[in-house]
Amino acid sequence: MNIVTAKGLTKDYGDLRAVDGIDFEIVKGECFGFLGPNGAGKTTVMSIVHCFFPPSAGELKVFGMDVREEPSRIKAKIGVMPQDDNLDPDLSVFENLIVYARYFDIPAKRSASLAWDLLAFVELKEKAKVNIRDLSGGMKRRLLLARSLINNPEILILDEPTVGLDPHSRHSVWEKLAYLKSQDTTLVLTTHYMEEAERICDRVAIMDSGKIVTTDSPAALMQKHGGTLENVYLELTGRSLEN
Image (cartoon, rainbow, N blue to C red; front, side, top):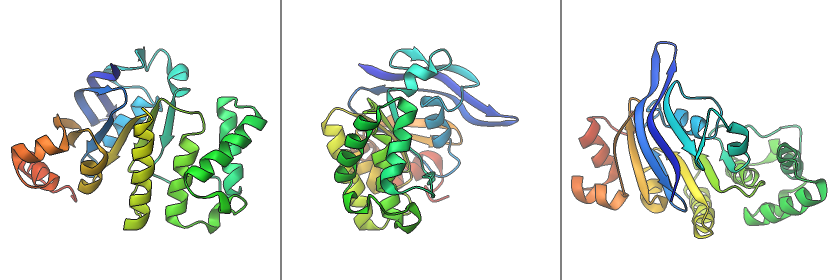
């Protein structure tokens, strides 16, 4: 069953076309990745999916609902882990989760229980009373993941979930995402890390200059075009993923 369907999806910022008439479908329970360098249009697509802003043209349906017509109902069923750290620096780790739960009208008693469970999941229980400013980069990424799960989402949006992390922290996040996928959570992520796409994505859409160049499983793409996903991207676009 398709949980997200896009047809001719387009987003303009003045004279800049960030997303250029793309089509894609995401199946319930899969991990779908948008692979490409900075500026390819990945984050813009994700922002439209979680109803941060509307498309300029085309159609996007999430859970069968149009993002223009029913954004509130869609948002209630989606969790978002942003690329940038937008945690509240004046609050503790635990308080960040409790305050965020209010956006979903989760009662205080329930949100406290959820917060402890999520902190255990991301291995941050011992940091519950610590101020955000005193966390490492890896800990902040894990807390952002915990926060994105506070409303028990059916779709989890992950914008560069392991950007800037050391290898150990990156693998820790991957393990958490693999578990969530095993629980039938649909994962939609952006990445420019080849290993990340190969390890956790069932399918990837390779993006360049606002367009989707091709969509397939990492294994099928590498078999068809040879070598690594880096080689695939270079062959299809003539550019490196690092550009």
